[in-house]
Image (cartoon, rainbow, N blue to C red):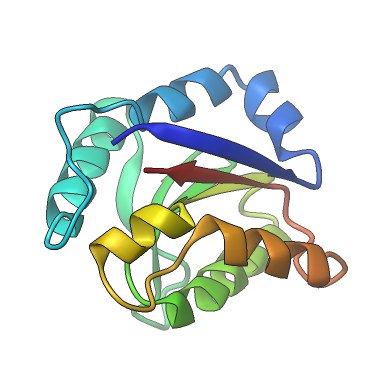
Length: 153
């Protein structure tokens, strides 16, 4: 697995940089020992989870006490979501991050997804950075949380 690109929605790059976390975040996705292909998602999730936990992030964080809804990780006023599943889950991820921003639990977020090419190697109809980036641009006035979209392959 390697970092392919970063997309900056609503100045998220400056928010992550201001916290000295942007370089750390992108370095997480430089893991050549992880190969992208069918059946790789559990290995990616385990690796990313370990990286975040070892850096003091809470993992599998509930977004409120009344539901079972979770995001991948949270630390201070930052949230992170990893999506390697069906594309239909990605808008839901964006909605959860927007909710946390609107209730002032976070100030910025990151969403990590495979590139379009990597997603096709993982399986059918997998979330991918190309599609999510287009949708973030379309819904710019709806999704107002600063989000770094991290694309890996």
